[in-house]
Amino acid sequence: MDQATHEKVMVYLRTQLSQAASRLESYTVDRNGKPLLRRSAVLPLEKYIRDFNLKGKEPRWIAVPGLRGSGKTTLLAQIYTQLNCKSNHKLYISLDEAKRVLGVRLNDILTVYEELLSEPFESLQETVYLFIDEVQYDDEWGVVLKSLYDRTKRVFIFCTGSSALALRLNPDVSRRITLERLYPLSFTEYMMIKQEKMPIKGLGAEIRQALYESKDAEQVHERLSLLKKNAMRYWSNINRLELDMYLKYGSLPFTLQYTQEPIIYEQIEHTLSSVVNKDVAQLGKFDQITLGKIQQILYALANSGVTSLGNLGKMHNLAVNTVIDALNVLEQSEVLLRVYPYGVSGTHAKKPSKYLFLSSAYRSMFFNLIGSSQPYDHYKGMLWEDAVGMQLHRMLGGRIGSALNYDSSDAGADFITRSGANQIAIEVGYGTKDYRQAENTLTRYGGAYGLSISSAPLSINPSKNVVKVPFSYFLLT
Image (tube, rainbow, N blue to C red):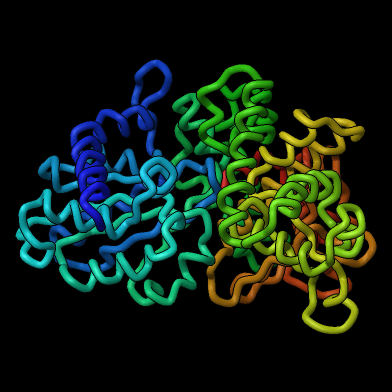
């Protein structure tokens, strides 16, 4: 690097080291200055640090991928501000900011930081902690951090990115890095952060066990019946309007600082624009005409999750392959959750995939900010399906032998899950949903039992193979 760049980076790093603590602290408190309660996602990250410091155990290179707006920077800030070490031994940088404002690269930053430490990384006697936000903004981040990781065992690295796939597939890091995905807020996390409403210890795990690890529908019903008292206790002091607020926008934690819905939806739209213009543009290498149409594609999907690729292409004057590429990148950037049709061959493989929003807030934004002719009660059901899809993806994601599909046949279930030996048909609907769609799927494809998630009370069908599960129970998982 030339002298001018060197000086620019030196000034930047000195500023970061002196001001980062106060700057990041602002991410860890609410608008009244009260510390935010920490999500459960913080716990494994802090455990990695303890295990490294006390036992010398790996891993010491952690990546936190997740949807933009899901709280990655807040997560890093909470760890950074609680970390007890020399002030110059922890460094936070945003590569988005470094590239956009300074035009410098990660390698330049680390070279100058080594100078500020006054000793080579190889000679460090105490651990240095690096917090690198939006790592994907430097194309060479993988090889740079791999080189640093291999040079010394005294550097502990946290980095965030908008694409788990891009982080995992980077050949320079795949054998060294550990991924801890950050999802949008669950309902219990939303209530914890917003109102300090703590979940009932163990209840979520017990409901999950009942829903997904029972031998049959009768056992599901029996187990959930025993948990009814605690589920009702959790909900007893909660205004039911909180459920609508959660579905509309509360799964994105940054929205909790605002009180007016128009402003909230404007901020969500701004965040989505950043995803398209930064993350999607980088991951997909699309031209400006195609980028300009990606939000239009998302709006079409917001109105109907199952749409043929050919129809999307004709609607927006794009080649089918371009539509496929756009949807793949939106999935990588974690805006969309793709649910494949059940089956791997024949007619089922030819059916279109269903696209849900990983955060229902994005679908809600399209209906409320841009507008739609669909009545609220109709798209509210779609928000429910997004929320259920996110929770299922969160539970099943990455597990060996697990799968999440949907029944593309007429009157089929919204989801077919496989985890271990259990295959379960799951139907989701706002209102008093009946058992038929789950029953239809069980008849076609078999399975241990079905679940019908709706507003209806807990009950079991006459055939005793499908359980009606209140949405209020499901949200506690």
